[in-house]
Every structure is written in structure tokens, then in C-alpha cells.
Length: 346
Image (cartoon, rainbow, N blue to C red):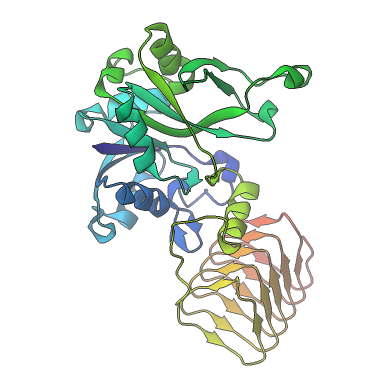
């Protein structure tokens, strides 16, 4: 069995964080994001993984290499132009001649994929799609199933007046198990979508198309700064299972500094006296000067926070400088090498 991770997006919703860092390798609790998906697949016994890339592919390949360090074998396919989710699957087909697990490249989940594969095989399905229940279905396209979890139809985002009459609240979670026969439904070299082209054709041809309902499973699309920050808070609060976080990085910290038990501080950080760090993640080599406050925030590597500065509920990318007495307010997102002069308020 093989896997394909669709990691070709430009990450436009996550800008400015993705201007110089492709979305698939933005740091999540100080690890490139794709490593969580790779670990999820490896845990299911899947070691042959293809990454379908398009935006800044060289940066991703240089960082992850051949995958040996992570116990897998990584192959890379770079689309000549954006080909859509289904088109990318077809383009990578030369390496996908068996049952394939397909993941959207921006999904963070603690799903046990082995359970999905087991149901897929037990039902002799040609395609299985993972569905997740959501509280507000109006923000998503819905997927309807029968009582036996066969896929019935895909619905566009429901209008507010339709919400009360809905009988389902499950949406596409971006995890699929596909047999090679599905490749026959996708034309060569065309931009083709799973959601709008491939899945409706599977239904039209009456193939065995099953749903796996993700109950009591964590799931988050990290494609926006708000969701990216939320994923960090969910990790720190213990809401995401099955992953070991690196809490053993060596750093310098003054005795008068307060760092709460949830926060994770990266290797080679320097934390000066009377600093407070609460529910936050600091990347490698971050330097925090006296009396600074960082709470509910993510600071990427080699940034510097000056005396008495405050960072609240924000994200700072690499090598940022926050000057003395600066206040970075809730919801701020600073791109690489942003510099805020003393006493600035953002």
C-alpha cells in the first residue's frame, strides 16, 4: 500500500507566513507540518509516500530528503502546472499502482488510518472518504450517506434557511482510500477535482463508495493563521493525541523567568530575567529580553523580543524583531524579518 500527500498549494490563506516557507513545511510546534502526516502514515505501516508538489518544491525536498530519517521512503512529483486534487493524483499515477491513501496537505488529524483501511477492505470498496461532523455546516459542502455509510450525494454549502431541515452535518475531511480503478475516471493532463469531478463520477458509475465517519478524532485545516494558531493551542492543551512533542530542547533561562508548564521552548533560546511565557511555542534561537511577556503565541526561529515588549495571541515568522515596549495585539501575524521599532503598537 502507498500514500500520496497533495502538497502543491501556495498557501495563500496563510500568508504572510507562506511567502518564503511553503505551507507543507511551516513549523507546527517546531516540526515541519508534513512530518505529522508522515508519522500518521508510518504508524499505519505505510512507508512508500509520494509528495505531490507545485509551490517552492525544492525547499520541501531539501528539508525532508529521501525520508530515511523518518522511517519512510519519500518520492517527489512536481506538477507542471496546478492540476487540481484529482489531476495531481492522476499525474502521480506512475507510482500509485496499488491501493493508495490520499491526504490533503493541510490537514492535521490524530486519525488512526489503519482503522479506515480495515473498513475499506472489509467492504470491498473502490473508494472510501473520511467524513468529519462539524457544528456549522453552512461553511462547508456536505456529504450525505445512508445508514450503511454508503455515499449518496455531495451538497454545496447549505443556505441559512436550509440548516434546520438538514439531516447530516458531515463534511469531507480530506482523507481518501482509493483503488487503482479510480485512475480510469481521470483524464490525462487535465485540471481535475476530486470533489467536483471524480467523486460524482464514482457515484454515477455506481462503484462501491464508502464513508468513514471520524468520531472522537481531532481534525483541523491549518490553512489560515487562526486555524494554525488554534492547532498549536490544541497541541499544548493535550487535545491532539498520538504525537510526541519535543520538550527537551536545551535553552538558557534566568531563574526569575516564568515559563508555564504548557509552553514549549526551542533549542538555543535565551530567556532573560523577569520574562513571562504563557501557553506559547518558541522556535530555535529565539532571544527574549528582560520583562517581556509572550502569551498564547507562536514565535518562529531566531526572532528577538526586546525589553518590556508584549506579544499576545499572535504569530511571528522567522527572524522578526520586536522593539522595546512594543505591544503586538491579538490576531497579529508578522512575516519573516518584520521589524517593529520601539513603542510600536500593532
